[in-house]
Image (cartoon, rainbow, N blue to C red; front, side, top):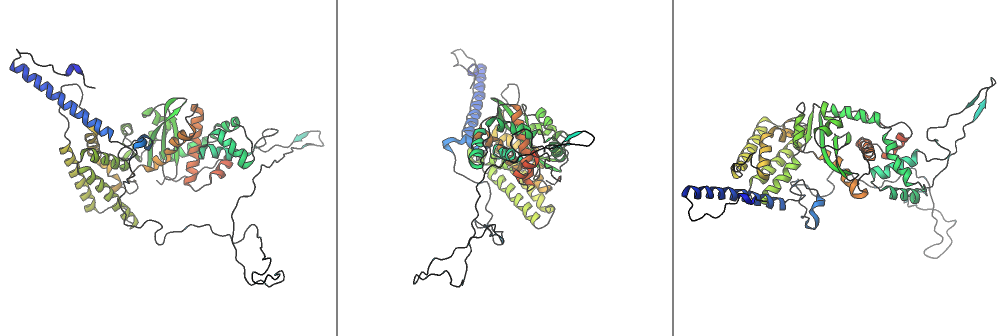
Length: 481
């Protein structure tokens, strides 16, 4: 809102020329401030998930029509020539063969029980057998030695009580809650009806903390591997725990993922996550200022964010430079992809120079059309607005914006981290917020385990069963991005 005390009052009959000029100057300052405020509000009204970092859920009923930021590739939709096809392939040795014999001739009705077989057509049906819970009774014998000592055999780890569920049920319950995001009550219903395992919701609720307690070695290994990676992605997103805002920090590569819960979004939370303090590779992120505090790392900025912001500015201002700059970024990305496909490790020097020169020209054009607002005499710098702020970031951090063109190991965007952390929003939409920090971090530890295993082609059920049998899966660490 505008401070009413700053609005000049109407001049009286005895106002001097100097006073009138001062009032006019005050009026001009107010007009500039109001015009900037109107522009800011109009830009805010035009923001949506397509042209800003707002989530799709914020669009409501006014959800914009889909508009991809990708540029045409020239290829037809569907499977490309020479691409791998996918179908349900028959098995060479089926589990069961059922032979169907025609009862009678379809022409004259004669009995065909002794007629010769002149052909067979085979079709395979893949189905699930009836699933039921099996009970294995473990009997630990006690045997008496000739010396008089009675020795008892040890029970296996899964036989922890007179009656208990085994690692298979525990793995499935954890999978339903942590991987498929089922609420505890619905997961219990699924186990009872589909698998014949009538577990309690209390038992299911305890599964994740129990599983997470067995992951200390895995988490330490992944954290150390991420800290030593040449390129890693970083992001953070808000999450509700017991009604309070927390932050989930993610550090990841194409083969690793690590999630950390904290009450802080900034340096304290990132330090507690354990990766960035010792990280000396290229940190790819969305430009949050606090990442710059880790000056021992090199930085790469997410250009998917830039494309959205440029689209929003083009829509609200009608200026041409945002669209041209977005096209330049996409064209540079395609050039890098083509160079990689051709087996090259860098773009030609003249091509890099042309990209940089065009980039600088467009930034200069944008600054000329969006000059900084004049100072009003108030303390502090006047707000630059959406266009001015983006232009300042793109100019100051040009090397980080274009790092994907000078280092082919650095990706064009930060989509790896955004994909990995998206499950936090999915979990909260389906199952609601977490009730305690302990359960929230347990969920994230299990997700670190499952996400990393999935990136290595491991079955979630297999690695969860291994976890509950006391042999957690740990990847053969590679720091390749």
